[in-house]
Length: 240
Ligand code: ADP
Ligand code: MG
Image 1 (cartoon, rainbow, N blue to C red):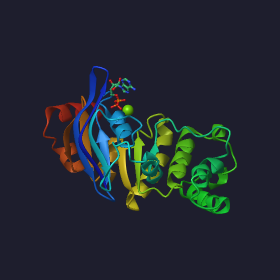
Image 2: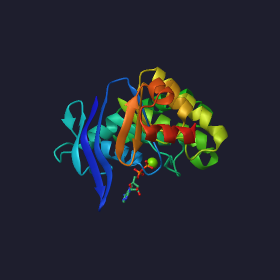
Image 3: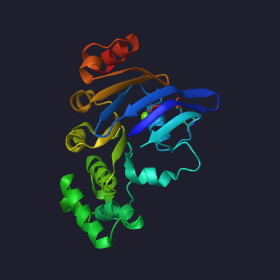
């Protein structure tokens, strides 16, 4: 579904991504782990072209997104992104946050969007907050609204960039539960995370990045129980 080939990215002199290759199949959950500054966010941002890659290709169902003739809006409508900072619209209610994009992109009528929006809020456990404003919600609740908002576009895949890193520890679990349920339902997901328990339980594949490279990848049991590379071992010994 998503195929990254020889992807590189430089900021000035600094090479932040070096020859990244990754294929993600439909229904797969790929977790990306690695030290801070290793290029994980830049990698996700290069996938949906929030950053322009310096080299290489990113293909989505065969089409190269790193190509001026590709309309990136199409990709962003089909592949949602959830950020560390939830970026909800502060002057819109929770339900309006969820219905805004589908209405603007004419995915259906306003009434339909409201019905779907309420179903999605129910799914993330926040139906009773529909008419509240984001500032009255906890960080964990806001992040669950952000996930509902991404789901409102009926995405084919979702990219997550450390969705729980900005949350107080006691709020992390509810967000991870929502993500787990999405994974269980077969959503294709690329998740940058520091939550090793989540990665171990939910990922089909773990990617370990350091210094702009994919150092190692494998099934969770391989990476966590028997990492091949020293750098992976060192990183895991610090975070586990
Ligand atoms: P991670 O998400 O793994 O912590 P990032 O992708 O955020 O890593 O950053 C990788 C490196 O790229 C860091 O050294 C960071 O300072 C640099 N970087 C990221 N974004 C920019 C930017 N817009 N301009 C310049 N340097 C950047
Ligand atoms: Mg990051």
